[in-house]
Structures are given as C-alpha cells and as structure tokens.
Image (cartoon, rainbow, N blue to C red; front, side, top):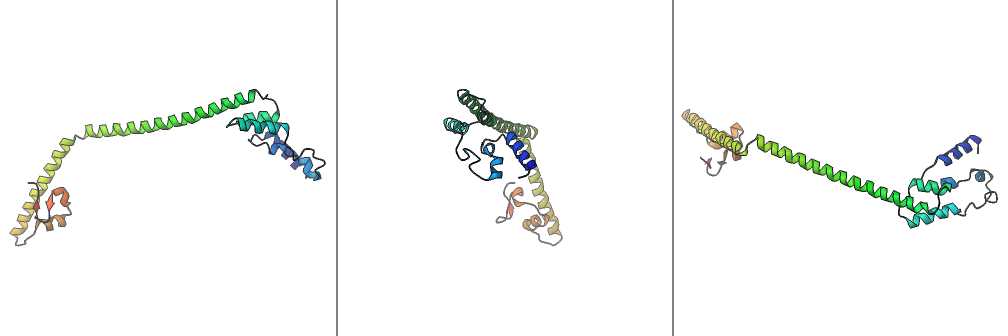
Length: 186
C-alpha cells in the first residue's frame, strides 16, 4: 500500500465521528504484512469496545459524542449514562417540539380556513344571493315564454325544451321539468 493512501486512511480514521467504532479499529499496517502474528488482538474486542457495548445495552440511545468519548477513553463510566440520559431527554424534547409544531401548523390552517369562510359569508350575504338567483330564474322563465310566443307567431311551433336546449341553458337552474314541459315554480 502506498504511503499517501496509508496517510489518507489514518486521517480518515481520526476524523470519523460515526456511531460505529469498526472504522477506528482498522489496522492499516497489519493489512500490509497480511499476517495475524503482527497484529495482536486483531479479532478480540478491546476494553473500550466492551464498555461501548455495555453502555448501548443499558441505555436505548447513545449519542455520537458519547461514542466518541468512549472510544477516546476521556469519559468515565459514571458520567456516560448521565450524558446519554441527557441526550435521550434532548431527543424526546426535539420529537415533542416537532409534534407541537405540526399541531400548531394544523391549527393555523384551520383558523385560516375559518377566517376565509367568515369573510365569504360576510361579503356575500346568502339571503341576498338567494333572492338574486330567484329574480334571475323568474326573468329567464319569462324571457323563454316570450321567445316561445314570438316564434309561434311566425308559424314555427317551438317547445320550451327545444328553446332551452338551443340556448344551452341548464334545466335544473331554471327549475324546468321535461315531463310536464313547464317550469315547476312560477
């Protein structure tokens, strides 16, 4: 293995902050010689690794900082569970914060919709709109009757159904019944 590659691997191992200590246990010099006698305890877990595994089984969550401290050997066994409990508490608080932010967003959306509905109802008085629709319907019905009378005077017998279809009007809006061939509300 070249010297530059070996140096890059060493720098990578030092800067690695992952939750797995496998990359830190790699021995570049042992790979060059490819003999297990040159690498003592290559397959045996170290004391630091067993301490890490014991900490992982005691606490559900271990932060990256705790793993880094355990692998470097700077923290004591007594302070590690406290820090991991703090980090677990911190994770719980972050999850609760996300949940609360989601609920606040939903409430804001509901409030926005309610404000829009209130604005629409205050801007458009429903009883006034209903009276305008009825006036339009009665005016349209009278106009269709007059149009039918004018076309009948020219010797063309035209039904209301033919007039409504030729004008492209909706029968439901006009309250027109095809079976009776008349308007239902007059």
